[in-house]
Structures are given as C-alpha cells and as structure tokens.
Length: 121
Image 1 (tube, rainbow, N blue to C red):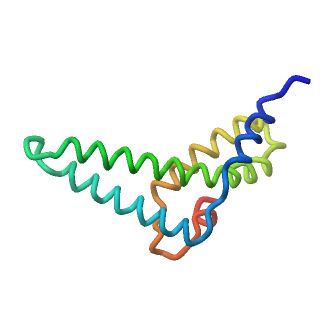
Image 2: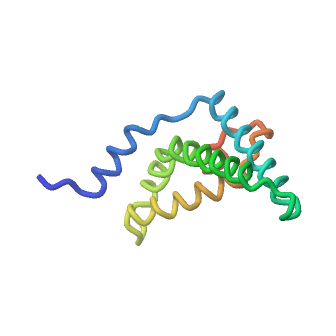
C-alpha cells in the first residue's frame, strides 16, 4: 500500500514530544535571552562587532526556535483539522499554521505567564 503525505507527516509528529509547562518557560526564556544578546551584538558598529559570537548566538537561537516549534506541531495539526471543511486542503492549512506558529513564536512573551498554545491559538 502506498503511503500518502499525511501518513509521513503524522509519523513525523510521533517523534515530536510536547513540552511541559516548565520546559516551555525555560526554553522561552532562553529564546528571549538569545534574542536580546543577538540584538545587542548587532547594534555594535561593524568594526567592533564580534562576528564569531554573533554567529554562535544566531545558531543557538535558531536551534531553540526549531525545537520550540517542533514541540508545537501537534497544535498546528489539531487547529488545522478543525478547518478541514473549508476550501483549502489539510496540507495547505498545516502549512499556513506552521507560518502562523513561527510568527507567534516571534511575538510570544513568556513573562506574561501564558502558555504558548493559548497564545498561538
């Protein structure tokens, strides 16, 4: 039997474990610290900018954001499945949801005490 795109995607979701509230808070704080450090390094004049440290911080920030997003992929699928009766296919809905997830991650403020899934939805 031929496997469809949904089967492959849902298999991938099986390896995406959701975060506990404590892990979410810790990772969101880490993302905020890395983002602040990156911004601080970018504000320095080019001649005095530590390019190697800036690259390290950006790599760490990308890694944290990817892990945070991966832990919330099930949320995207759950919300997208609610709108499956619309004119868009489930694949398109999931793709748009992933874009929305990344935008929500950029604007998420962990200090407010709200879970990310509540904020993103």
